[in-house]
Image (tube, rainbow, N blue to C red):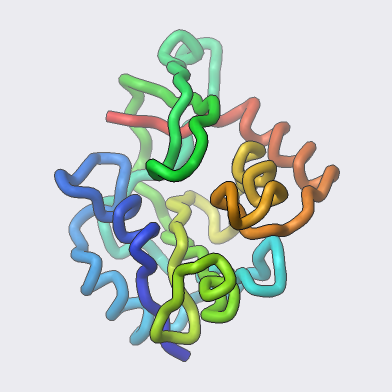
Length: 185
């Protein structure tokens, strides 16, 4: 099985200049090499048959992706309308500023199959392509953001995957994201 970073993931996980809330101490090439040479501790099913998640112990100083919302830090939440790419429509996002996230125990790359990436107009020369990565304390997936679930349901033309919205999964995601938020330096 071969794995490559998609251009979408490369830009988000390894931006230039480097940001404190992305993968640290590792080049994109080293990340790819490690995923191809080291078996994951666990393989988790994704939200659709073309998606899977590989759980690896964090070998970097990368910090967790999310921080719990508490009465003590709620005032540090910010929000804005943003798009992930120039082609996508902006959506409302929120994040913390001024919080210290702990170093993650796990890196959980999100993989899409070669066939799905070709359907989405992003062909790869490997079996699987990394489309994102979770930085977590536990060896498990954190729920997809509700807006990502909506975008996926809208289809490939709107930056999604074409997978229908799962109402129970959406409610579970809302419960998680009401209690947690991403952070930015």
